[in-house]
Each structure stands twice: as structure tokens, then as C-alpha cells.
Image 1 (tube, rainbow, N blue to C red):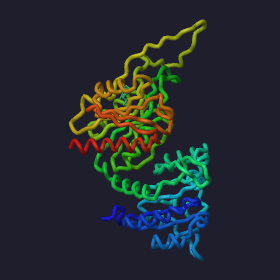
Image 2 (cartoon, rainbow, N blue to C red):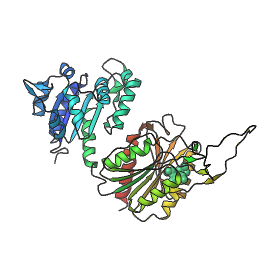
Image 3 (cartoon, rainbow, N blue to C red):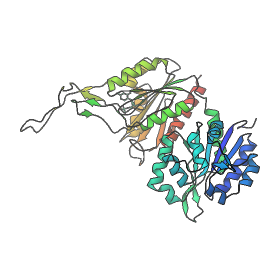
Length: 404
Ligand code: C5P
């Protein structure tokens, strides 16, 4: 059976020279058995003709908010699709999607679509690197959309750099992969800890760390995408998680995080500890704001050890349960991570080295290495945290398949 048999794909084409590749893409989609509806922005029609696309897709192409005297029903189209893909997506369309504008049919359909959305950007390298585009792309990823990174190579401008739309064959592979994995964790429960912990010194101060919670949230989103039920225990983070399949428990301190984790751990098939937990907390929390005294030059805080959530859960781990941890190291990264893998009873550990630019706290990207119990290792390029999350779940699924 063709891999995308019966899948309803809504393709949005915007005004980029890469629009010519959309014709090949439609042909491949139809060959794979997909039903394809095409929406073009007015600018896209200058690059490729609607007749070509309607012939290839075997459906009329929609270009305006009205067709003749009739209103085009953008809501119905948005509900019809199993997936929407915007290829090529210009910097302008990406900005409009991030801002929620609806000044053409493609934007109106996008805003009313309930299906997963894929974005294949195409633009000049400087437009792709511009802080405005970086900000808008990050927002779309935060919305839960799938970003298909542009390739690096020769661009229409004559410059060389990142900005070429991914090739149609690659877009097909990504859609196939998505539909194959969509239900791969159905029936499984995934427990994730994320974010920092804050350990109160007094009512206004705390001991904390720079963890943003972004990696854990990306993991929760990926698990939900694969059909799992997700328990996310989130420390004080400004990040928001709003997904019907993700139940969020907000906590502040390590002790609260442990308590919440212990509540959900017995039912969890897969537990990923992505939180940066404070190792120590003040022995006592002052009931009132601590005031500096006249002539006082030092202040001593007595700290006591926090519980190790990973090690505590590992003691109750049953066969079939998977436990995955993170390590963020500033020196002797591999040796330290290996020690943690063993000491905390992890099935594998995700190491991110602070020396890698773009990796670790508060970045949208991360560069990781997986270290397994059997001494195997897997190393990855710098990627968006959402793609790192997908790599982590691919490794988890490989482990469950090889160890039934
Ligand atoms: O902080 P550390 O490098 O030891 O963290 C390694 C792993 O252990 C991480 O997965 C972290 O979430 C987990 N951890 C924990 N409880 C702690 C400290 C760390 O679960 N008190």
C-alpha cells in the first residue's frame, strides 16, 4: 500500500521561487495515495500556475477568500485535513502565522485548522537568520508546529547559505514518518520532570538555577504527538504547556517535585527526568524577609541535602519501566555522565555539554549525546529542542522494541 494512502493533505504554497518544487511535491503526494487540496497565496501564483497544481492534485486550487460570488469555506477545509503543510513558507507568511493574521485564504485556513501543521521555509540566508524570523519560527515551534529545516546550498539570490526549501522527497519522508509514529506511544504513560526548582530562603528569596523548562516541555509535546498520556511535573518556569493530552502539575521545590513524581511514577511506562533539581536547600526558611543588620558583612546559610528524585524513583522501578535522565556538565562531561547513569539507575542518559555553543539552559537548541548502559553512545548535531525530543523518543522506542 502507498505510504500516505487516504491521507488528506492540505498544501499551502506561498510566493517564493521554491514554489516550483511544490508541483513535484504534489505529484509525489498523489503517487503515495494522498488526497491533496492546494491553497496558493496571490504571490505564489506569480511563480507557478494554479492550472499546473489543479491538474496534478486532481482538485481545484483555491487562491482567494471568495470564488466568483461565493465565499470559500476556510473552516471546512481546515477541518478536512489530516495534516497541513506550507511549502514553501516565506518569511512573510511565517511572520503572519506567528502574528495570527488572516488577510488571505491560506492564513484563514491555517488559523482554523485543527490538524498538525508542517512548515518548510524557503528564503534568502539573511532573511532566515534575521532576529525577526528567528523569533517568529521559534513561536511557531512553540505552537506545536513541525519545522522542516531549510537546506544549505546555492540560493536563488546567487548567495550560498541556509535557506533552500527541503526537497520534495524529504517532505514526503517527514510526512510518512509522522503518520507512522503518530500512535507509536498510544496506551503508554510518560512522566516528565522539567524546569528548575526554587528553594526558599525567606518569603522573597530563593536558591534556584537557570533551567528554562524548554527541553522538558518539548519532550511532553513529542510524547503527546506520539499518542501517549503525559504527566508533566513542571518547576517554576515561564514556559506554558497547553495540550489536551498533557496533565501539568506545577511545583516549586525539590521536595514537592519528588512527591508529585512519586504519585505518578507507579503508572508510568517511561519516565524522563529533565528537571534541574537544586541539590541543597536552606535548612530553615525564615518566616520574614531577612534584614541586613548594621555592620553585618557576611551571612551564613545552613543548607541541607535535597532528595535525589532519580535515585529515589529508581529504587521502586519495576521491570518494563524505563528511566531516562539528563546530565549537564561543565568538565569531564562523559566520565561524569557515565557515573550518573549507573548511580541513578537510568536506562540511558542525555548529556549536554555547556561548552557547546547553543546547548543547555534557556537556548532553543541543544547538542546532545546519549550514553547507554551497555556503553553504546549516540552523538547528534546542534538541533532545535523539539527535534532533540524526537531523537530521545526514537531511542526510547528502539529500546522497547529490542527489549520486549
Ligand atoms: O543534577 P544532576 O546532574 O545530578 O542531574 C542528573 C539527573 O538527575 C537529571 O536527570 C536530574 O533531573 C536528576 N536529578 C533528580 N533529583 C535531584 C538531582 C538530579 O532527579 N535531586
